[in-house]
Amino acid sequence: MTSRRALKAAEAVREVVSMAILAELNDPRIRDVTVTHVEVSGDLRHAKVHVSVMGDEKKQKLSLKGLQSAAGFLQSKVAKRIETRYTPRIEFVLDQGVKKSIEVARILHEVLPPPPSDAEEAEAEEHEPDDNPERPAADQG
Picture 1 (cartoon, rainbow, N blue to C red):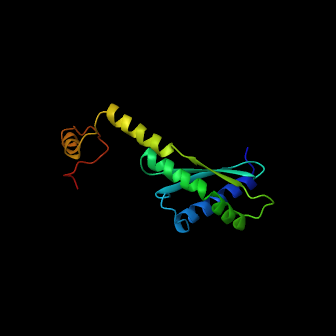
Picture 2: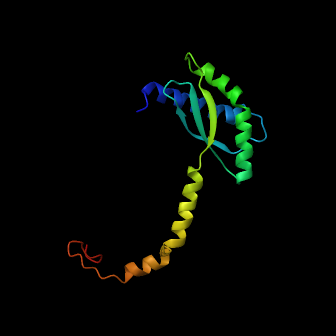
Picture 3: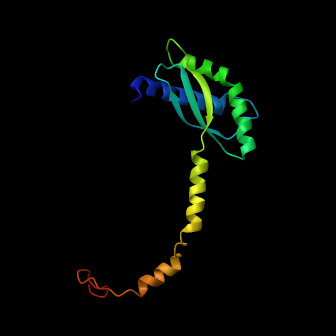
């Protein structure tokens, strides 16, 4: 189980890194990057920053290289935010979660039958008999 201290450090690293990527990094390779989550080791010496990059595989690899080259700058930003004896060494990992969820949605769309359109639903409701005796008829009142 991860300690509360490590969870707090992971959240701080996520905030600092995501804000620095958004506002302070000027590297043209780093575009459309989202920090999804951060894992910090128990001794707070290592941090795995999981990022999602919009685009093809080439753009993802390019962004990851840019992030690795900016790791020292980002690590210094983290050092200013969290006060620990050791600043976590930052490692960037490409998060495939978004890509996998899009693939699952595509497969489900292929396999499942298409949902009925609104016109078909309204037509089906009109032709259903009203067997519910507890519901009052529309013309009573």
